[in-house]
Structure formats: structure tokens, C-alpha cells
Amino acid sequence: MVIDHVQDYCDWCMGPLSEASRIRSRWLGLPIEDAWACNGCLQAGRYHVPPDGWNGPPEEWLAGDQYVLGADDVLVIVNALNEILHGPDAIDDSEFQARTGVPREAARQTFQRLSGSAS
Ligand SMILES: [Zn+2]
Image (tube, rainbow, N blue to C red; front, top):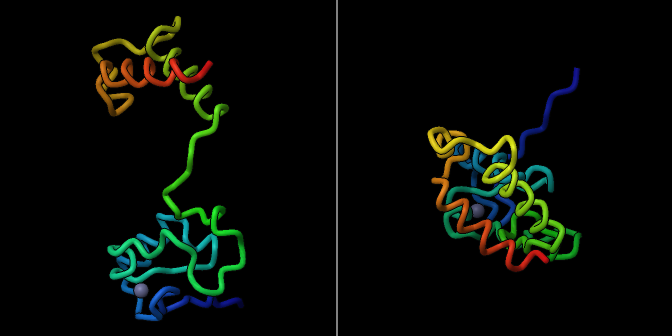
């Protein structure tokens, strides 16, 4: 039987992990990089930069919160917004916010801003 080794320290400050910090680290995807952050380092945003010993290029650190949309990303978003706003199966006003989490007007404004830079 294999017993999972559960890391019990923070990769940034070596402090102890709480259950809440484990949940948050998991939600952020840090364990994908074999990294765990304590509450203090999560709140201070230290996880935005790779911990000491991380071997990849810093720009590939997935928790950097600095992902920049490329032209392909923008095209996908513009096309998806166009479909839900104007397509044959566009989402009806009465359920737009419930289904998308944003008011139709906010989606329309985002569509206009992005479609201006998509082509
Ligand atoms: Zn820490």
C-alpha cells in the first residue's frame, strides 16, 4: 500500500501549512509544481514568484497571475462572446446574467473592447 507523503511546510518560508492553506494552494494549482504555500505567504502574494529550488523559467511559473492573452486567446473570447450575444443561440436577456455571471451590458462592452483589438 502506498501512503501519500503530505508535505507539511511552506515552500517559501518553511512555515507550517494549515488545512486552509492546503486547500488554497490546491485551488491555485501549486501542487502541480510540487509547491505549497502557508497562509502568510498566500496573503502576501509570495506564491506569485517561484520558490527557491524551482527549476523552470520564471515566466512559466503558473501562479504568476501575469498570464497575458495572446491574439489567439482574444479571438476565442471574441468569438464566444459574439455567439452568446448575437449568435442564433444567443443567450436571452432574462437568463444572461444567471448563466454567464455578468450582466449582458458588461459582456457587450468586453466584446466591443476586445473585438477592436482582435483583428
Ligand atoms: Zn510561507
